[in-house]
Image 1 (cartoon, rainbow, N blue to C red):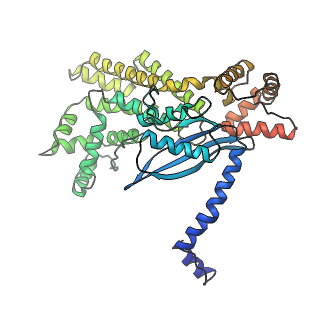
Image 2 (cartoon, helix red, strand yellow):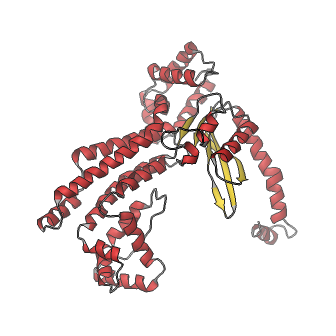
Image 3 (tube, rainbow, N blue to C red):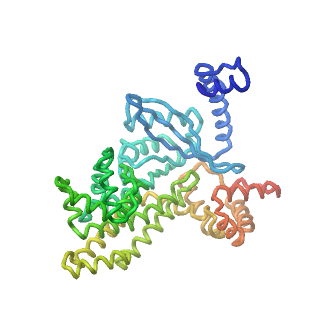
Length: 438
């Protein structure tokens, strides 16, 4: 508004005045109350909600935003900020008390079905979700129904490839970051590398680094090094005082093979993360994506898969006696095994929600699958009052609408799951069909 008010004064009204003080008053006293009132009304019509928590450090202030995710029959899935507050620390006790306060304030304690956060021990107490000194179990003790705990799947997938890659003969992560830091702010070094690129008839591209939570940053960083591999090798080996680690890396002709291998695997992991990194993705879709990733890794392990370009280079280096093929394949096999071990361990948290797969509407709804969901709800949400006979009749109506042809149309148009359900419920409303059980 510091800038906007001046534009308004020049173009429309020279007496206009609304900068910081007035803007803050409007936001705090008009817009925020209106937004929270609207949210409260929407939450009243939603039977179940999930909450998301995180922490963000701003110098000496620790901010804790809390998000609520919910669905109602007239709108798509909604994700809203329900609270932002500061706290003196990030212990499980502090976070759980903040969340319980939010739940009580908004009458959500009896509606809460899932807690979502990153996989830190403070939040879940490790992969087994045991112990009482974590947020998840403290929340479980204070809600009347079973609570589902869902950690960040993107972190799990990221950690899978990181853990497996760290056990390879070449530390790819260190190589990327050492090369990047060598050129980061040094213009003279970059200009020298450009000269080597011209000599090798290779277009220069700026080098990239990876992040600590590098979900999608690993693959493009490796790709950039592979594009400039020949000039980079010539550049570093020509240095009088080349960093020892990089000198060893570029002196070994097998190094490029390992870079290509990790790049190939990073492509598989990145495509999986892109599938699940969106606001409307459901937990069943996440579970399916991880199961598909596991299946692909199992197939690669079974065939000891490596790309053709690597096989060709491996054959040449084997003939020159610079690498042992059996030794190379043993590390490839171990890489796939390490990935599978980590994924299976951490994806066990999705086993509870397998009975909800039919809600994705990727296949015709079968009563047998709905029964499994009903059994889960009856066991863990004892306060439910679902009439099974009425539910059966409603499921038949859904089955009549969500035919194979309709599902095919949804898939071709890439209609999100929540909008498929909204379409069904709107159809029922038009036909004046009630659906209280479903």
